[in-house]
Length: 252
Image (cartoon, rainbow, N blue to C red; front, side, top):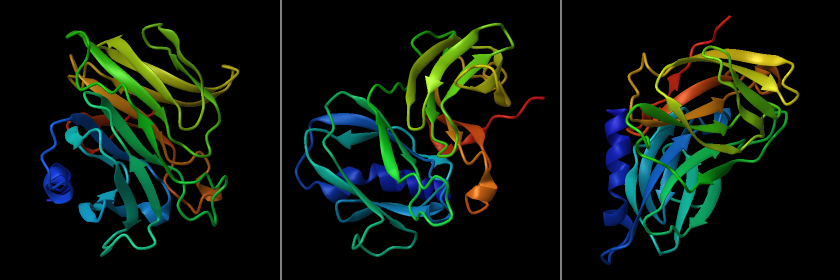
C-alpha cells in the first residue's frame, strides 16, 4: 500500500502541477537517505501539490517522467503536512529535456544532537541510467550519503578488482561502475587505504542484476551514539523500480 501510494503520487506530477501540456521531459528517481530522526517520514510537495505522502527513510521512487524546461519548487515537510508553509527545505529545479536524474535526499534537518550537523540537501546526479550499457554487466552508481563518515576508498577484495573508488567524500557520486555481473566483496577504507572501516558482500549475480543499473548508497551513522542514536552505517541498494532499499550484508 505504501509503495503504491508513493508511485501514484509521483506519476501524478503532470496532472497536479502543470495545466498546460508538457512536451519536454526528463527522467527522475528520488531516494530518501536523510538519517535524521525528524525526517524518517516526510511529505514531498511539488509547487503547492502533495506528490509523496509519508516518504520513508531508505526508500526510493521508480524513475518517472518529469517536466523539463520549466521552473518548479520541491518542498520537504514533516509527515501529514497540509501545505508548504514554513517548509523544512525548499528547492527550485529546471530540468534539461532528455536527461536522466538521480536525486538523493541527504543530511540533517534539525541539528541538535548530531555530530556533524550536516545540513539537509537534495544532491543531484544528472547522468542517471535506467539499465546497464551491456547486458552482461551491472552498472553501479555509488553515493556517499553518511554525514559522519570520512573520505573513503572502496576496495574490491573478492575477485581482485582492487580499488574501484578512490577518495570519495560525503555527498559525492562516483560515476557508474560498469561491472561484470558477479558476486563481489567490498572493503570501505579510509582515504589512506590502510584502515578498513567496514566490509560488505555485494552479490550482484545472486541478486540477478544482469543488464540492470543500481545505486549503492552509504547510509546512516558510523557513530550512532553521537547522532541521537540514529541508524547505523550500511550500504543499501536502490533499484530502478524503486521501493525499499536493499541492505548489503556485512562480511567478516
